[in-house]
Length: 207
Image (cartoon, rainbow, N blue to C red; front, side):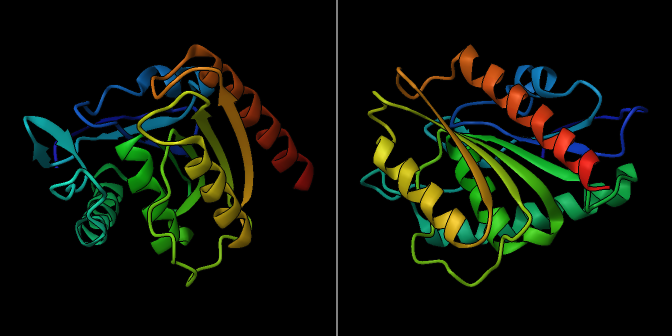
């Protein structure tokens, strides 16, 4: 998979960036930079092409989510991340996902299928993939989610249902809703940074 890797000397932790439909592996660098500049960054480009746009998994003809494709590509992305950890020599247990839209849905699937690989997830405007999935425990996993009150692509109710689902699986979920649509807003970055700093503070207290 096409990707880039930035190695940090300041931290052993790594942000994994998963872009939205039509994006590139560098799209979420501003989010990672505002949340925490000290981390290494692995940006992954989706290798499914839909009308010339890069995605992580296919859609059905009616535009709905192809869960079969999501499951198949989830395995591919996990395999890629594990190989990248060996190639770039980073710890597999110090990974934090940042995903937007299609990339956020892939991040949800990654968390559900391989929770031990990740320490946290920032899910920007996800829908609710894998609604019936209840075969994993997300205890100890920190998740920050955002949604748009006027979003016509992902209804806010979908995001609320996902929050409830992840919480039922044991995750600690923080939720922020903008007054806008599906587009990313700077307020989301600011709130994500606040959440991250509080998370780090709590982790230090626990040591």
